[in-house]
Length: 70
Image (cartoon, rainbow, N blue to C red):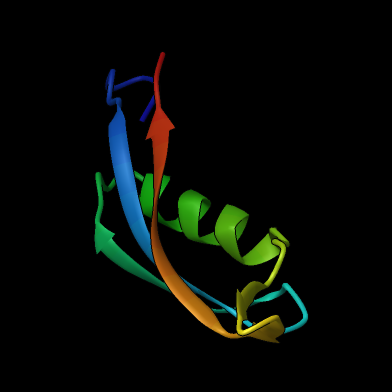
């Protein structure tokens, strides 16, 4: 991707469990050149604060953008 001068944003849908770990990560829009796989790997390795509903931790799904720039 670097040699080809590719840059842009990869969008991923992430589901975070009640313990803050990523339960599911799905590609919404990508760039190719291995950047999609790198973004998914980074998202799966991340941890978050869990979402809350009525004061209790709950599973949450959101969309995340990862920007690649040269």
